[in-house]
Length: 236
Image (cartoon, rainbow, N blue to C red; front, side):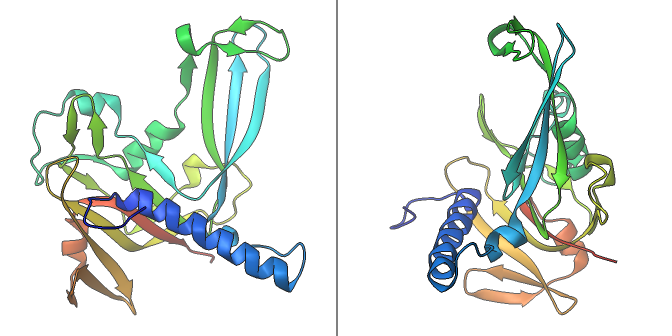
């Protein structure tokens, strides 16, 4: 995997890298001591609260799903109005994508829910909420779609300080995050392109483009074609 000159997706690489890193740390820590916590999990893992409400008996079924990153769809109503790939045009914001992520979803027709309480196949409402926030939050913006096969190249607005209070349960005391990294995809195709990154280093933004490393500005970061956003939790 990830060898030769084939085009690769940075989000797939991020998931592979974190999972491999976690498994390697597990091996070392298990050799050192039993029942130790994994530092990669402690830093990157959060938990989603998955609630499904049966519309026949109103029973709410809940479970917690761990995540290392959150993939955000661009809202369907925004895509319906999308007509071109103008990178200068602002399509929506990260907050719009987050609101779309947590909004209730109807489960019906082919996705009907089998309720454990009334033991029948019923329509239901599904809803996600962030239950446990990680120290480092990775947000993946789903710019690529397959029907039609295209990349959404328009600008998606993102904040330098992210407030997640409206998307979380009351379990979280600190809900603000500071942006410290942005991966951008350059190119209009779904199977080709180039990745660059902006990273915050000692209050200075640095742009990394293969062998080229140079200072950047906050405005340049803000105007970048973000594909993955990295935030660190502010505990104060």
